[in-house]
Length: 460
Ligand SMILES: C[S@@+](CC[C@H](N)C(=O)[O-])C[C@H]1O[C@@H](n2cnc3c(N)ncnc32)[C@H](O)[C@@H]1O
Ligand code: SF4
Ligand code: SF4
Image (spheres, rainbow, N blue to C red):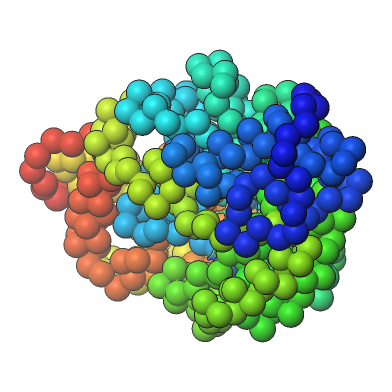
């Protein structure tokens, strides 16, 4: 790292951010600081040319490439959607991309918005729960445009073992979401963590995650990455803990702290949304930022972007026109329907013993077969049936969407991880009506090759 001294010295907190100062200035900031505590010219440049690290970077644009669907933990505030064009929140995307599609999208966007100098991978799941796709995408982008800043956003569970691969791929900016350093708080945020081939729950899950996050943070800082920490502010859960957390983040060498308000809505289908967990008020967010600001430089201009956001912060561009020119748009998709009555979407995923399979294209909705499955939920046990899930996944092979009246969080996650999108949006709709609405949505989002007219026919 270049060690040219600049006039940019740590100067206490940076509530709106000048981008070149930070109070996180002890030795654990390792390679980022010069002997007198100021930031090196290289670091200052990397900070001020990134729109999220500094308001000074506002003239630059970023692109998030949605190549990472799976996640290795569950947060009570997160419900990812892979085919959603109308919600503006983290974790949703219009369409998942392969690494090749991601690199192609970047090149097209770069042509259209030449100020795009940051390529980030932020989901819709966790980039490091999808390491092959993440690294392949980063490498393809770096090959096309060596000067771009590569950025990854992770929950940190798998960070420690990926730091050197990320570094070799050229990742300079890293975001870790750390919501607490106390497992008693963490168990209220994370229902489970999947680590070392085991699903951990309760305090053990939270402690494992926290330990791995801090070890990953330390390793990333030591590798010279500029680490920003995201913290989701959840009233009554971690709001009293923010100052202690920021003190620890400073000790571990994080450069910037981004306290983001919880987004919570029953319609999102998250645990917090369904249990009525409220969002913080603006005053509560600013109190938390002030408390954390005694330790850490604060980011306060985060837009809580979608995992496929493109453009300048706050001025996202619409990708619909681009989506239709990206290859691999399906000409038809298979949809599995869970129905007791045979007329309505009125069956819980876990209680279905068979699914009606439909092929949906732009011109037709055709019933192709009935597939039998072993019932996933047995008694009250709808959440601990890994082997039954494997059987369901096999039975649903080739299917892209499952329509059902209800579904548990665990099977939802497992389906998502295998590229199948469950939906309870059409609960109690007539099957024909639901399929027509899904068809329109897929066409609108550019996920189906468009050709006019719609017919429903029975092919059985
Ligand atoms: C969708 S995540 C993807 C990256 C990675 N899986 C993670 O959690 O850091 C991007 C950011 O959005 C945040 N996020 C997700 N759902 C949120 C919600 N309902 N309210 C506030 N922030 C949320 C996450 O905590 C994370 O900081
Ligand atoms: S780690 Fe990220 S993607 Fe995974 S559940 Fe939490 S917010 Fe969602
Ligand atoms: S979510 Fe915040 S940190 Fe991430 S790209 Fe958007 S503005 Fe930047």
